Image (cartoon, rainbow, N blue to C red; front, side, top):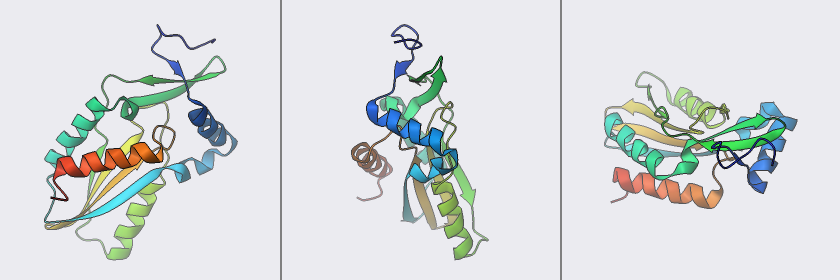
Length: 164
């Protein structure tokens, strides 16, 4: 296949990924609408430093979380990045009202990813007050199907000790 070789570190997309890529090309403005997003209210607080360590561990264990995508010589390809910048973002919303918090969570759910820059995942921690936060996981659907998403979500919440 032109443009993709085992030696280059770039590989063809799966059929499902190609379908998603094609839909993004047809309507780039709708790209963020295909994100998989989940928000969870966390009472009792959550240490952002610990969250970053857990997410770093997930990134090391799951190559799909480090995928980046490009179009090269007419072929769309993917590559797994070795190291990526932490996708954990902390938002201090202690002074915001409920409507503002909900709007911020919703806007982060549909914000499009730059497919050429791994990871195609965001983990957001919205701090509401000292004992209340919202944890949000957002992934571009091109790297994660529904089955994988739930496994990843289970692993994240278990590592954080949220449902013990």
